[in-house]
Image 1 (cartoon, rainbow, N blue to C red):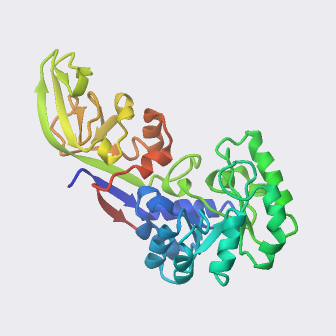
Image 2 (spheres, one colour):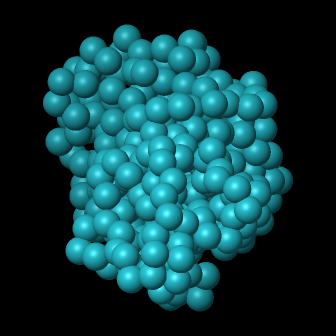
Image 3 (cartoon, helix red, strand yellow):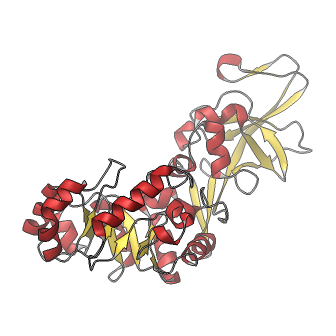
Length: 345
């Protein structure tokens, strides 16, 4: 069973995409960067393509090439990092669509891959990627003459509906693109939930597909079961793990499971995290180690073969809260040592 079994429900991912797609009037893409947020880009993307997704988004050209091999010809693949040095052959050969972020990238693309399709990314205030207004104004006519297929920007605070930055970025994006005969995209998962004004022609959900906030209505898509290596009895006063941070206050039964921070189970989540077996909550006992976690199973009537860390009883966002991070990090940290099992799709 390796260090654990990660079960991924492809039907749930498809259902989340359909639920988000139903909220918009235009096209809904799917963001599958970072190996589909740690859940397996090829399997996830093929399931989404069968469900009707026509546009996919990745972070870098290498991801796009891997995705093209998985999907074959047809679907559009947008590359958020744009046209980086050395990407021209990959962009041409794999029919990728770089989202151009700067004047330098625009010149590189038009010189190295003049027949390859491309899009434009604008910076509307996040100050991360994209052309700022003066830069866009300087190259706008040259860019439009080359016929970009999409103009996009990205919201910084979409998971906070009342944040003034949302309206500020919407106004900036509208001002920079109004009247252009080019499809536009501004909304990821949070932007879809902000409402129709943010939707434009293409929405591109990511974390909402995989069961994470801010899409509170999302169906859970993954569960993680960790195999028990060994069980032991402690008497009152005995300790567990590095630093003796857990001390038994009564006779206690401890199970050690095969997984740890080397598998993406963030060490900081230990004091607040519970594992489950047959619905019985079993708290982590002591520190999370590199390859193992000790768990208090005193309330169990028999020793379990595995304990569940992630599932309906404890979501990625619960684990994120326990760790002081976000659900994105929990998903993308899921380790390569897990055996992955897919259902549906």
